Figure 1: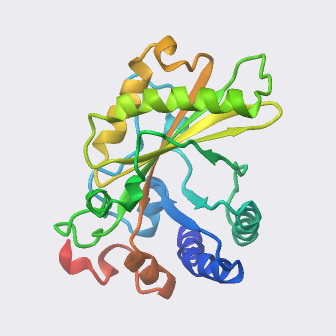
Figure 2: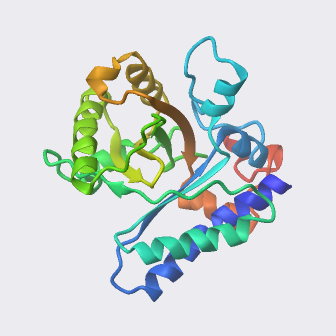
Length: 268
């Protein structure tokens, strides 16, 4: 029931975003809502999206690595050039969740622009390719999100100038493009962030299949630190299910029920 409460709050995020978008007229605002595999299993018992599972770092994980690779149970990603709007959304999200869930530290990051790439989000064919097919009717029009976090854990931790940070991000973006080029039907963007003590990157990728994400993670881990230019970096992978608006609406209205009581049980 606690999981259902968390899911219900998540399902109200589209309404919150619409309210914020209306109040900040003219602001660009995009968002995603991702459920981790454990939370989703509690919400909709016994029926996982195809291939949905935590990403694996290697075959000999210890307990800490298992926990790290599983990721969080719920993630909100807000995208906007209006920084104040992002802060408001972050605060509102925390207010609703703080009594029933642990809220991790919020990170504000900047999109790393790729000079060679047209905006793939605007490509309808590419966008359609990341949505789960209708042969899985319960999950149709949904997607998967992989977040690959790269945090610099070097002892120097010197704050880079904006120009130095941009150069580092651009070099890393080129390397990631080479790693993701072999995966078809994949949307991905790189974000960079920096504080006084830490700096890092997030690779956000969307697909209608889980396999590309594991392939990318394996490629990152097997590539040399020199070629990726990410020495002394902690890699944190996480996989989320991005439900369609229809699923979120059903969850918000209470018509999405667990197990055999699901209104879509006839499709199982």
